[in-house]
Length: 214
Ligand code: AP5
Ligand code: ZN
Image (cartoon, rainbow, N blue to C red; front, side, top):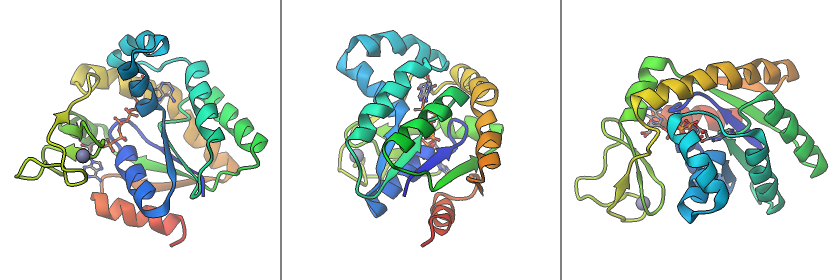
């Protein structure tokens, strides 16, 4: 199964993608994570994108398409979850071409709908485990009282430099200007499904399971 999770920053794409990796042996392809890894490794590309990402703007199509191409070639037993990619029409066209070349098809594009007010609360309350990437939220999914990550037992939480109100405004503008046109694009192809991203994490898990047919 190959699916795209599409939705604004904070919609819950990463949270749900991680769940699908655990339960369905799917591979999560998050261009945001790949770009953050590039920064952490100190590569030239990482240095180039750091400021753009902190500000909340999109990096070039060429960079992210290259990252996706590489990862697709590694293959996946359970299929791919595209998380945060594609984000522009040229990226969507490039993905369609890559999938065709590899003899793969897209099974669903799932739009996670959440209104802007909720997104601010989600983004400003988010932290992740520095060791395994488990996603937490100060109110809805706080760190366990013993200070240990539920997934790996790690004890260090980190916050992203673009998770502040000002960068979030830019990220939202980028989403509405450049990414939201993809909803019409996939709707026209008959691939689009929608869910209420304001529902609880468990409810959203159930909706996705149902959409994927189990
Ligand atoms: P990226 O890393 O993709 O960030 P994003 O799209 O802004 O999405 P987020 O990771 O912020 O949110 P999410 O939907 O995964 O939410 P999460 O599950 O964490 O991109 C970052 C930057 O990289 C971009 O700005 C750009 O510069 C660059 N970039 C990346 N891809 C690119 C591309 N293709 N082209 C160009 N540039 C690109 O959840 C958020 C919080 O809410 C968490 O705290 C979570 O616990 C909580 N939560 C989740 N679900 C629920 C729920 N149902 N109820 C209550 N709380 C919930
Ligand atoms: Zn952890």
